[in-house]
Image (cartoon, rainbow, N blue to C red; front, side, top):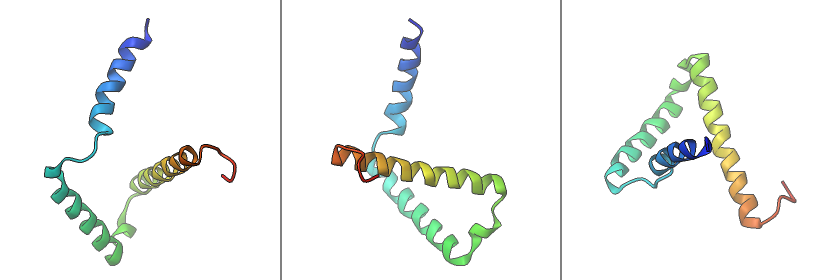
Length: 81
């Protein structure tokens, strides 16, 4: 009985967060990638706080985790991972 409202909240967030980018968002994505590459080349990533670096590390680990989950789903078994 208590799971239904939580599931509805999950669906609300899933529709927004898991949706593919819209065509209108592509210029923002290109600008973000350009900014990321320029900061990587200039060494601006060295000026982060420990909190920012920790959060960025967790985001990177999450991306890696979902990659491996997709690989396991695609291969239909966990053997080899």
